[in-house]
Image 1 (cartoon, protein in one colour):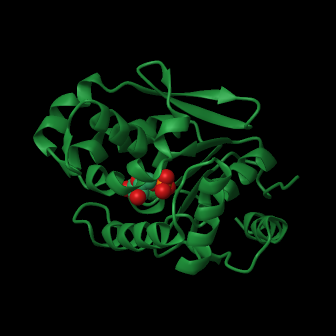
Image 2 (cartoon, rainbow, N blue to C red; image 1 turned 30 degrees about the vertical axis):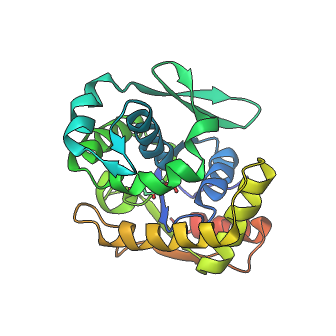
Length: 232
Ligand code: DC
C-alpha cells in the first residue's frame, strides 16, 4: 500500500480524454489508498439518459430549455457495490449503470455536458462529495474547475486508436453490437467536443502530471502512481 509522507487525506483529480482507462486507474488508486472513487462521467451520462427517456431529444437533437426545466427532478445518488469495488449510480432510486454506457448515450452526452446549468449543478454536487477529501475523482474538469486546489492532479492520455480498441472490447464483452468504426468516430467527436466546448473545456491543468498509458499495463500504471504519490 502507498503512503504519502504526511499521511493526510488528499483530493486526487484524474482528468483526460475519453476511454483512456481513467475510471479503471482511478478505481485502483482509490482501492490502494482506501479512498472513495467518484466517476463524474457517470453523472453526465445519467442526466443524458434521463433527458433521453423524458423526451428532451428529438432525432438526436437536444432541447436545452426542456432539459434545464427537468433538472430539479433528476435525483442522482451513488451506492457502494461491493462486487465492483466501486459505487453504482442511481437516478430517482433506479440502478442505471447498465443503461448509461451504451453507444447511444455516448453519442448524446457531449450535448448535455455542454449545458452550463447542468455543469453548475453537477460541479456543486461533486464539490460536496469531495469536501472531506480522501477522494479520487475522474472526469474532464476536476483539476481545472471542480477542485483547482487538488493536491494531486493527473492528466491521462493515449492514442485514439488504442482507446477505441479498448472501448470496442469493453462494449463487445457486454454484448453490445457495435463496429470499430462507430467507436473511433464517437471518440474523435467527443475529443473534439470536450476540448472545444465554451464552458469548462477539457484541458490539462498547469500543475497536472501527464500519464500516457498507451503501452502500459495496469501494474505499470500503479508503479507510476506510487512514485508520483510519494512525492506529493
Ligand atoms: O468519462 P465518460 O466518457 O464516461 O464521460 C462522459 C461524457 O461526460 C464525456 O464525453 C464528457 C462529459 N464529462 C464532462 O464534461 N465533465 C466531466 N467531469 C466528466 C465527463
